[in-house]
Image (cartoon, rainbow, N blue to C red; front, side, top):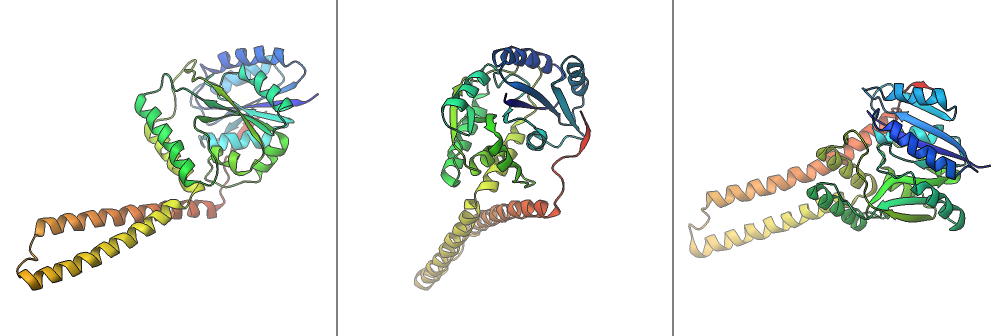
Length: 308
């Protein structure tokens, strides 16, 4: 019999976990030919998430948990789950039921019959999300598609069923700055996609703020593309050429009409504009330098305080 490990990253999800566990048990009854391992990753929760998980462990020996010493982020939680998972198949799911457990049956059947290494879910609607957030999400996927050499499908999420071979490949990528959606694509392997409509959280509130999502998007872009560096170089060359042409034009105009080099307001505007472009390009360089700096420290992705 194959063993399926279900990885559930959790951060302050005490109200969602009981609902998730009940829904997962219904799915487990349909996949009774599989041995389940339920692995909760407590990402330094500040509520009673860990206590809730321990109460489930008292009634189900297949429930296990890893508790971090502090909040290291979802990416670290995913990596920890992949590292500690012992199953032949591994699936990553959210505890808030936005990744419908019922899809797991279809995902397993697809994995068995479609000759693929992973089955991933993608949202085809964003009902319930703020319009500006949905618009920016679509823009992000469009930009990643244009600028990155890897393929990131619009609406892709972390809900993914994978073979042990693919998980072992992911574990070889020990980089500190992680963007799982890109890593899933980078390692290759054949992936089948299953579409589903967006589902609201069963309980609690999202822990992703608007600016948190923006930072996460920028990290993903920087991690898998050097195009921003090339754009910074191109912009520098363009403004150098523009400045040279402007100087020649100013000299010729001064020689022909005389006293025509005045215009301090326009000059100040041009200087401010070019200075802003320079600072923007320096900021891009700084982001890449910061990522390199963090990687060279070789700090662990997470620290386990307790696991069972």
